[in-house]
Image (cartoon, rainbow, N blue to C red; front, side, top):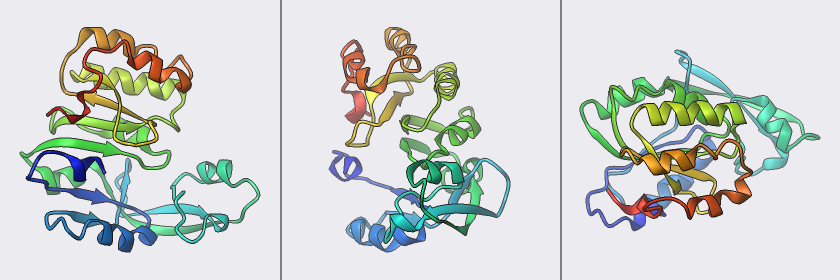
Length: 212
């Protein structure tokens, strides 16, 4: 909904979805946007052509939890039979090379069911110009949160509050140095997420999601 409601009239949209069950639904959702490209592939941190994904029978019919981490499925469906399926895969840097070589990425949203950490850590920020990043934090450990924060801050990003997900489970980072916000962001790995809303009130321009 964020992309559809954005004020920009020019929308070149790239949607990557590993779960084949969701492709038809995505095509219907984005049919009015002629520039939207939908890829039924998996993003991997390893140089492989296929990746094994897991899902639970209890999550039918759409299998919203579709992850290459079997433990991620078992945590949510501990008593269910877990099935698997191989999906065509590509690394994030190869995908960006093919589709965004020498192009600016205005918004980059990451939500890959437990694989968010590996993707961010594999991403070459020196090569690709990404203005804004929305990253799901829900499945990150404290150590992973600290490592992601360090990488983003080291590459001149600053934290600006909640991201694109309407459930407030994304962090939003802008390619813009804001020293105060970076100090505030140091608390993200050490406080419970129920306190994030209160923490975000301390930010400078914490509504920066809709700014370019």
